Amino acid sequence: MLASALPRRWAHVQGVGRRAALAAPLFSPDEAELLVGAALLHDIGYSPELIDTGFHPIDGARYLRETGAPTRLVNLVAHHSCAYREAELRGLTGELAAFPAEVTPIRDALWWADMTTTPDGEMTTVDQRISEVQARYGPADLVTAFIRQAQGELVGAVERTEQHLQAAGIAHA
Ligand SMILES: [Fe+2]
Image (cartoon, rainbow, N blue to C red; front, side, top):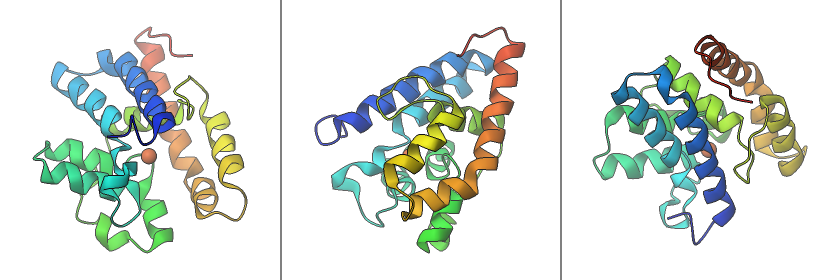
């Protein structure tokens, strides 16, 4: 759904999937599958045919819910990478509330995978990623305000995941 309409986004998503697969050994086989699945689906809401609220975590989660995707996967997509803060800025907190948030190492690993992958699907650091988002959207954009507010939580999820990776001897940089 992204490949033809939004090839760059698709490249990003595949990179996030590769990052998630790297972290998968931290989890049980079921949770590893959930993590990689959520990584590959986290930005599906950007697909032009799915745009409804215009906020991709909600549009993607609603679509996945309709298709009968597992509830945890749907909710991980709805809340990926601190979506609640951007939902606040967009006046979509009520819509997002249909999807309960989980606060777990799996969630952290998904955020880590997204926040350490460039728009082209290459590896990066969370600090570079946040700077790149601000530069790409520009100072006046809502997304720039969002990423500034979300920075602490995003970096926290990345640091926790990288500690787990390091403890497991998984090279990630
Ligand atoms: Fe996203």
